[in-house]
Image 1 (cartoon, rainbow, N blue to C red):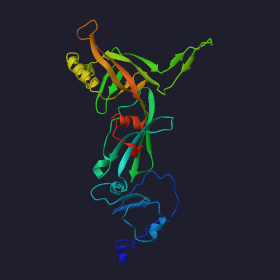
Image 2 (image 1 turned 180 degrees about the vertical axis):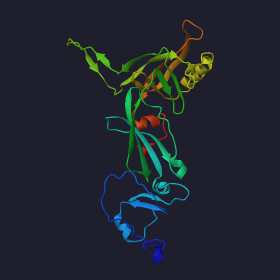
Image 3 (image 1 turned 120 degrees about the vertical axis):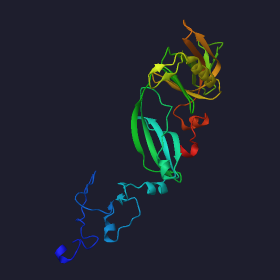
Length: 300
């Protein structure tokens, strides 16, 4: 082609295009032995009949301009199409989702975030969904799953968690209000249930000493400070999420007076408290009403 006076034999913008074909499940693209200014892939083959548009749409797969990087995604386009990212969770194999977080998206930097879900039971496999939202309308779900598991007892507020695997004990009872009426001429009494109340209550205790995550050692000498902070946490009047090693979990409030008792050694202090169930751990509304999430009814 040099002898013909051309720098390139592909004189037209489409002269190097291959014949349009339908190929499914393309997972990678390679560009070899060439100098490339831009790369554009779309599902809309009709666009090749006219000059290529550089505006992202829902048919665009990638568009790389090679401006000092290999970025070929649609982050800027995504920001214009998303007002928030909604995060939901459910036990695998169940149907109903619980909304845990809603993250506002105003810039590209807002798409880089992390959130900690403190309200998962032990020995339970969950699915989490990331859902783009625009004007209150949800887009497609991106779902991943993980097995949640831990030892001991964990007590969490909205932003604070205390835990211990040491000497964990608990009790619970199911509360259902009823009255028994003895009839004059009948052998058996009549049970009257006038309330829909049906909830758990109980007690829990353990030796609370902070664990150093780097050394995996307990801070025995500083245990008193951890227990003081824990007592303040138990006494703040706010609902909590109580969960145990055996997959039991409740949305609770602390009642009566939390206490400490020495158990055979001055450094082995058992903290005990009484609790009552105040909501459903899988209810978005109950988590919100009890101050454990910020996701109001518009995101349920």
